[in-house]
Length: 459
Ligand SMILES: Cc1cc2nc3c(=O)[nH]c(=O)nc-3n(C[C@H](O)[C@H](O)[C@H](O)COP(=O)(O)OP(=O)(O)OC[C@H]3O[C@@H](n4cnc5c(N)ncnc54)[C@H](O)[C@@H]3O)c2cc1C
Image (cartoon, rainbow, N blue to C red):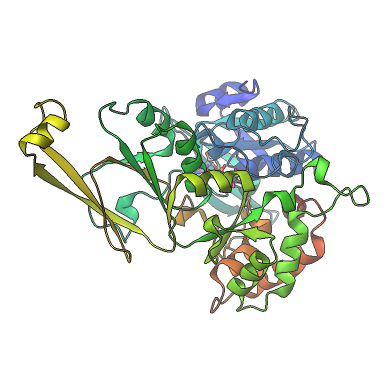
C-alpha cells in the first residue's frame, strides 16, 4: 500500500538526487495540505523540480489517528483534488486505511521530477538574495531517524504543515486539570484497553471532550463495551455538527429535480453572509433551530468546529451515554473503603477486604461517585497551538514563504463563527471571508482555495 515513490529520509534523497540539490519548490509537509500543494504544482508547472519533505508518510496526520477513525466528510470532498478513490459510494465513510491508500496512490502518480521524502524534517529556512535580485531559500533538512542533515537550495518554499496534528491535548497541558491517579487512555490505545477489561469489575468510561473524536470514541465504546459498563461524556463547550443527512443526503432521499440538493458550501455561504462580525454563536444557533446543525441531546450549541454527525451516530451516543454538557472534567479522587463481612462475601468470597470508590470531579457540576473501575479516555482538542490551524496567520509569511494550510479555505469563517462576539479579525481575513463567499462552488470550497493559493505561489 505504501507508495513506491517515497524516499526514505535524507539518505534516500542523497542516493536519489546526490548531495547538491537545487529545486524550484520545497513543500514542507505531506498531508492533505502538502499533497494538494504538490498536485497544484504538478498541474500548473509539471516541468518544475519539486521536493516534498515530510516527517510523516503520505497523508500526514492520518498516519497517527485512532484505528477506528472515519472520514466524516464524503470522500469526494476530501483528499488530493481530482485523484480517484477506491470507493464507489460517496455515502460510505472512508476508513483510515482507505484515506492513507488514497494519499499513497497519489504519490505514485507525481511527475518524475517531483520527489516525496518521508522521515525528513525541514528544520530551518533562510532567505538569501541572488546577484540577479531573486530570492533563494537555503532549506536545512534533518533525517528524523538518523539525524543526518543536508541543505537544499529552493526558489520557493511552501509551508504546508497545516494542522500538523501530533496528539490530543494531554492533561499536563490542560489548565483546568487538577489531579488524578488514574492514567488517561489515548484513543490509539482504546482497543487494547477495552480488550484488557477485568472480568470481575464493571467499568465507567469517562470520555473527556465532545468534539468529533469524543463522539467517535463514545460510539466505539458503546458498540464494544460489556452491557454492565457505563459511559460518561464530558463535552466541554457543547459543539454543533453539520447534520449529515442535510449536507449529504442519501441517494434514495435526493430530489429528482435537484440532484445536487444541498452542500456544505451552501450552508457555510449562508452562515458567512449572515455573520456581521459579532454574532457567530447566533448564526450557529439559527442553523441549529433550522435543523441544519445539531447537537447531542439537542442542547443549544456553544461552539462549531465543522464536524459532521449523522442521526445514527447521535442516536448511539444519546442512548448509551450520560452526557455532561458545557462542563469540564478536572480530575478524580480515589477512596479505599474497608468491607464488612457481608460485603467481603459479596465481593468475592472473602478474598477482598477493601473496595475503591472513585469520585469524578467537574468544574461546575457536583462530583460523581462510582464503585466501577474508571477509564479516562483523552479526547481533548487536537488543534496544536503551534500549527496556526485555527489562527489568524497570513498565508504569506514575513520571510516570503507561503503558509499553506488544509484549513485556509475555511479557517476564517469557522474562526469567526466559533469565537463569535468580540473577536477582532485582521483585514485580510475579512477579505478572505468575502472571497470565499464568492468562490464556494458546490460541493466544497476548500479545494478551490488551495488551488488559488498555489497560483499565488506560482506567481
Ligand atoms: C481524529 C481526526 C479526524 C479528522 N477527520 C477529518 C475528516 O473526516 N475530514 C476532514 O476534512 N478533516 C478531518 N480532520 C482534520 C484533518 O486533520 C485535516 O483534514 C487534514 O488531514 C490535515 O491535513 P494537513 O495537511 O493540514 O496536516 P497534517 O496531516 O497534520 O500534515 C502535516 C504534515 O506536516 C509534516 N511536518 C510537520 N513539521 C514538519 C517539518 N518541520 N518538516 C517537514 N514536515 C513537517 C508532518 O509530517 C505531516 O506530514 C481530522 C482530524 C483529526 C484529529
